[in-house]
Image 1 (spheres, chains in turn orange, brown):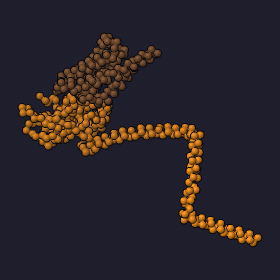
Image 2 (image 1 turned 135 degrees about the horizontal axis):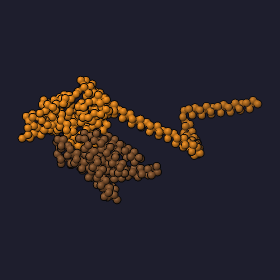
Image 3 (image 1 turned 90 degrees about the horizontal axis):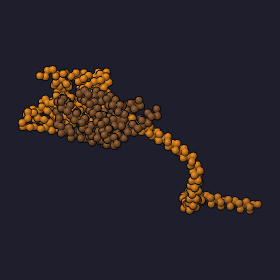
Image 4 (image 1 turned 90 degrees about the vertical axis):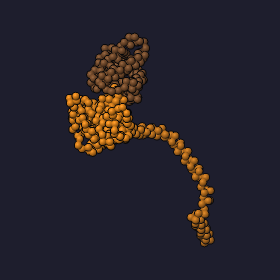
Length: 278
Length: 167
């Protein structure tokens, strides 16, 4: 009995020592290569089995998932289209707001005038005439002859008025004559429109030197427009020896092709001087 | 009754598109005239009584909103209508050819009428410049646009007749 006890005790001690030794060797990393050699095939096998199992499971459960995914996809597509339409709407609002802010800035910098903001809703059908139609009329205080501007400069004047719409004659129209002042040369002149919408500078005295880039402002003469509204810049001048006046080409400051919103100056009433002309 | 309604609606929509879109779409300095094309197409393809009625209405309306002296646009459109009626009797077998002839002649005569009126109202311009820079591009645009307009009005005309027949 005693010898058996001694035998077990010795075996326990030996096993204990082996376990402790293995733990120490494992902690110290000496057994890692051995573990790798032993575990790598096991891990590979486990991976292979796991992937096959998942594939197998997916094969049987996929119809349900596909239906869910399709539903989810349709919902997301719907949300995306809604968001896209919202973005377009917001971009339009932003664009409109930017135009209105610019007009508001102009109104603030020119507080001597009262303005009515209007949207351009149409353009004259005939290509020979340069007119636009705005969405404000006599019910908004607009009257015949009132000047029309944008934040950039002069647009034209009110030509005809209905209750809720008005027709604006642009300064590019062939029948439009605006009395102007050349800022640097300090001389009065006229700008006249044409059938093609180009603007020319007329009635500039021969002895005046006008440079390309000179700024053109309304002079206020004739009583059709208030003074000092920006009209455009001189592009080039033509001086003929036998002519009484110089003529020139003008680049209007307002881009009439993209005219969306305008301001009508409501506290300026044009003066009709036709009866005074002999 | 249905033909009156559909023709009127088509003219109304065309007028809105013309003022808002087509008048702003230029080739050089010219632009198409959708109203003229519709007058021509309805006169060629629709009932004479209905197209006559709506040509008068739309012509008067355009005359009101246009800066031209009274009734000049109306006279231009009515001339197009009469030309289309004449062509309809002459070359009815080939309606597309009729549309081309009416569009071509109608555009030229409309522009000449406008230029004469502008000359009388003392607007300074050069005739060759007006014809080259405005009339010719407008003519080209009108000719191009006459194809889809003719097809559309033809379809509308057939459907209108079918609806009226069913009613």
